[in-house]
Image (cartoon, rainbow, N blue to C red; front, top):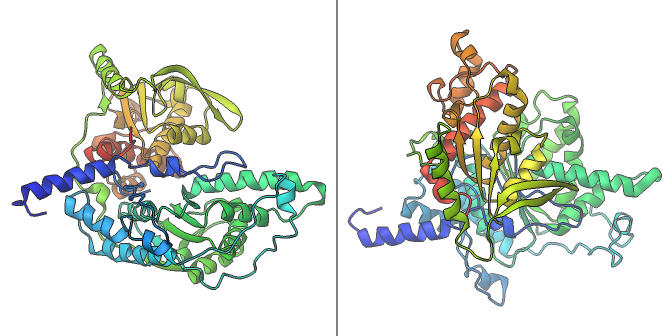
Length: 500
């Protein structure tokens, strides 16, 4: 940006901040059909997106909703991916990157193809709205091959922090307004939804049995013909066994997908049980997607960022007063949406009480979130519902708090993937709530753990060392949560996440 063009720079920065106010809001308003229970448009690792370059990687901007008479004319009534990207670079929100530019050009090409693409018709549900009627409709033959004009999907893989999710979300938010059948979802959340649907289909089929994948794929395709999957990974044999046929049916129904992953298709489920059964899914990805890497050589999560004041420690009256002031400033400006006590949130048929919240901001005590047997699904629903969360009185956790520590990690992952704005009061710096004296005085950090922390761009000096976690997956989850907490405390994250 030209430093001499002060007026232009201020205008561009203001435009970027204004547009960024819609960050993470898009998927909250473009939810897929909820006819088979609430569908997760978010993630754990939820739209909602959330994986990734922090602060600007999730549903960055919404385009204009100018109405036109045709698809072609509508394509000029909203900001397109390439123009979006250039504006972000010009305003200083993003740093220019030739590798990202290469990817955004591919996404622009797919965007242009979608403008001229008409997905094949998928019959609506039977007027009786009966699940059984949908499952056994004879007027809905299953397609056995791709539609002739369906655009090829994009499978984007690369190391963490290179901007894959940000680019995919930029593409998603740039889709023309008339494309209403769309869905952006973290892959983990998508599979939770799929398993719920498969279970319902099997119950409806009863003792005679049948193939539940076909009607589930049909319903998914009916809800969205543009799918954006974030963090595609296969670690569960149950997922591996159904993915090939699910993906094949979705594509044959005319669904176009953009996928991000840390792995090339050949490396998916690499050491998994019965991997040979998953190989056809790998070949499907390689043949029906443009498989391309984003090897920029820059981990944007490691670019130095000024921390914003969202974490407060220790647990003192002055810090409690300060966090309460922030909560009130965010919740007392709309008389139509005042804070209420004990709002009830329904999750899978259960009621979860929210201690204090408006429709967009919620406040919890640590024990409200982690002292109860809440699951990943609970945290996903919370972060989908509220763009900003306050968590008070987070203690330092040791071996006697292992269950609470695991839940807190799951909660942090949900916040991160949903691009939630998070405010915390804690006994010690929030990055160090898992560290303990036993670890400090024990054996040195292992080479394995050191490698994990190096990959995630954090150091022992920042997060301390913990003896709570021992297994490889636990160690990785611990280190990743600490890394994400650091990122979620950055100015970029605070400026763009959790639109209020």
